[in-house]
Image 1 (cartoon, rainbow, N blue to C red):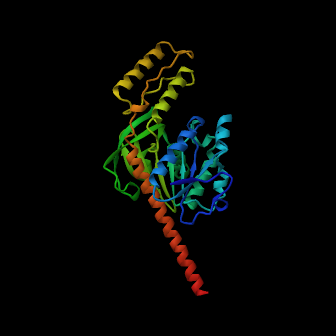
Image 2: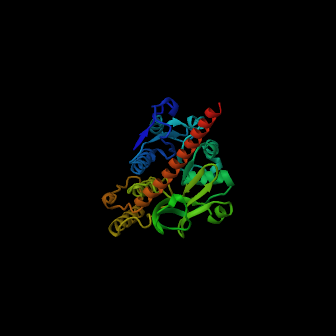
Image 3: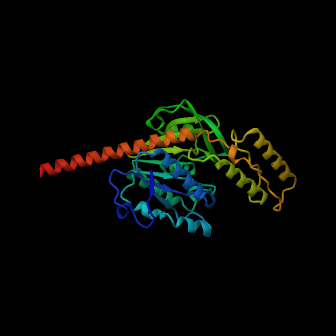
Length: 334
């Protein structure tokens, strides 16, 4: 089960949980329209993988992210990122991606703050998950590896292959499905040459899941195993609306391996109608498909986060055991 700690206080000022209760921070950097959905996705997933014990969650926001008035009001429920950077330690951290506003990540308004989060996480967490753009930013800051743009957005559900073993992918099958939604990718050959360990990949997406072991285990996900079943549909619908409104130049590519034949045909008809008469006044009637959308990646997502949480809990208990042993020895010596 999970318990979300209020923004009003840190763990030390919050409820009297035992020292054995894992505390996980989530830095939700998603754009306004996806803030609540992202929060629900991670809460639902972590609830499912922690049925037999309690974990506490702390949500954080970065004030440098461009937000509407409604978005700023929403993240007032979160702690500001300065609270994280001032904390002695969290057991684990999850850092999401966000929208791109500049050609280079170093030019993003949040870049300096995000690099401070990377540096803090190296020394103050047992493990951190870096998701999508969060992974791209962390790898760039750590090792100077630049992401490379795709010719068009990579979107869909892709079959990825397990290419190495680690506790994080314990009991995983030889292949599994993962949703991906991004405009850029990290070159696998550079990751390997810099010491990153790729655990899963596919020809279409490249490196899917990879690790960097230091004082903290950094887990990098270019995909989105946390996505609920309609997430890619919501994104595709948003991109279509942006095209109709003139906010983007090209019609978005339909997600691969996601819609059934009937829904895909209906979206093709909608595309043809929009391209014949692109107007901000166009009435958009989207297929009624949310009840038929797949969630084929969910089982592996549960397995991945179960393994990750087990890793965090095991290392937390090991650390507490060492501290208790050291304290007992010190008392005996006195």
